[in-house]
Length: 251
Picture 1 (cartoon, rainbow, N blue to C red):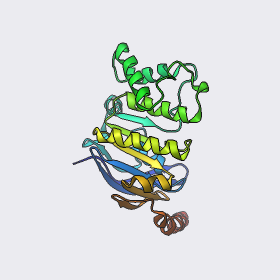
Picture 2: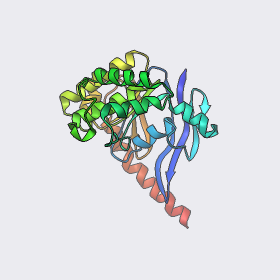
Picture 3: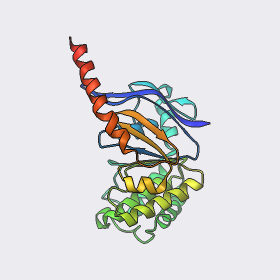
Picture 4: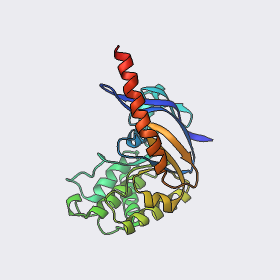
């Protein structure tokens, strides 16, 4: 059964930017999925749509067979509590220690304060930085910051883990460590969805790979590698077709 489904989904941004166009896909409980493609291909938009952070311009996004566009604000917020998210813009608060940042995220799921502290410590231990809890974000290295952000996403005990280019600030060794950790989390039944530019990493891990090009899904393969050819073949053609369509609409 597919727990997350996109049915002919599109997302438009004003004035005339097509971020995603006619994307259909399904993700089952416990899958590990890479979303790949060049910058501007729609990866971040796709992650925000399937986690309910933004709504589609057309088509349906369904999570646990619920159409996100039909949920009340409260219902949508309750569903979002099942997502652990790590993406640009979800930064650590500079005025709080790392542990306090993670505790705050855990409390948002309505867990009591005592449990929030325990979850924070467990998450920091899991990502390999158990001793940074009392530090402030500006005292962390780039790699430690990435791990702290992942710890915050994991501490809420998510059903779905959604990560937007999590290895961008890591060296190759740390990136591999990150993937080993994500595979371990996935083995516990957590659905892991990762956008990535890292061809080498995607090729090593060999899981399901969905490739986007200019907002269009151009390939969806299991046990796959980074599909460079799909980008090359579809991006230029898709952009050209959109330009022609806009010219016709203006006439």
